[in-house]
Every structure is written in structure tokens, then in C-alpha cells.
Length: 205
Image (cartoon, helix red, strand yellow):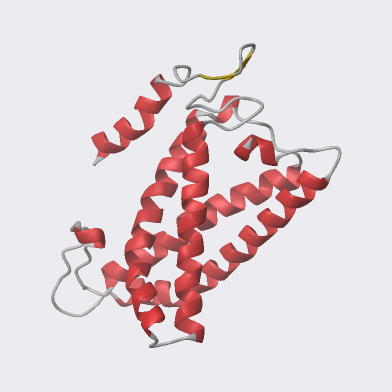
């Protein structure tokens, strides 16, 4: 697993300056793997938008469980909640490593508040799936997301503090994460409409 993670991280890092796409005769736009001072690279964008889609899926599954419990839609979505959560755990680890490797070349935060907000989201994106996985392990039940064995399970009583940790904080921190994501979207749109700061092209331009 460690070798797999290193390969995922370092292969794009080596190829940072390899990919270039030409537009027109005299214009050239470099779309590199790595970040630069003016924009985020392909890997960061893939992780950002991929995780955004997966978190939207997760919150939809929670909404289905709350507002349409036991419906066919709820049964389908809820069955994917844990596997997608495990995938998000892997992606946030990769994203954190990638962010650290690109720290010196990334676009600067527009303000101290934006920097704090981003750090808070990273902590929450890490904590929410981690606590869910801790609860899953503590339950003693086997867990094989997408058919890949991750936890074998065990016999006997469950590990109560792990189950309680998940019961008390997984959903609560999930709501805090949702609020921070909404705040992030609102701030990005506000900056996009501002004449002084243009942040959306960093991730979509």
C-alpha cells in the first residue's frame, strides 16, 4: 500500500513540466501536473473536483436517509455511504501529501481568513471519514469497500469507545464540514464577482 501511494504521488510530480497544450499559432497554455503561483495543476484539480463530487454524493445519501428513509433511493444511496467514505479517506491522504509537496509553488491565499478556512476544511475532510472508519472497526464487522478487504472483523464484544466516538462525532462533524463547504462555495463566488480578487480561474481556468 505504501509503495502504491508513493507511486501515485511521485509519478505526477516527476512529470510536472511535461504536458503542454497549444492554443492557436502564437498562444501556448501550459497545463502541468504541479501547481504554480497563478493556478492549480492537473492533479490538484482532479483531487479537488473528484472529492467535491464524492462529498456531494455522501451528503445526498445522508439526506436520503433523513428525508426518504427505507425508500428505494435511500437503500441504494446508503449502501454506498461507507465504501465512498473509505475512498474519501484515501483521497484526502493523497491530497494532503500532494498539497505539502506543492506548498511552495501554490497560489497564495487571498486572506488570513481564507487560509484558516482551508485548513479547517482539510482537518474536517480527514476527521469525518477517519471517525467513521474507527466506528466501523470498533463494531467488529468485516468491511470490504468495493470488494477490497479492509477490515476482517472480529468475534466477541465490540469496542465501545470506538463505536461511541463515531456515534457522537461522525454526524456532528459531517454537518460542520457541510457548513464549511457551503461557506467555501459562497466565498469563491463572492471573490469571482469582486474586481479585486479572481480565484476561480486558479481551479477552473
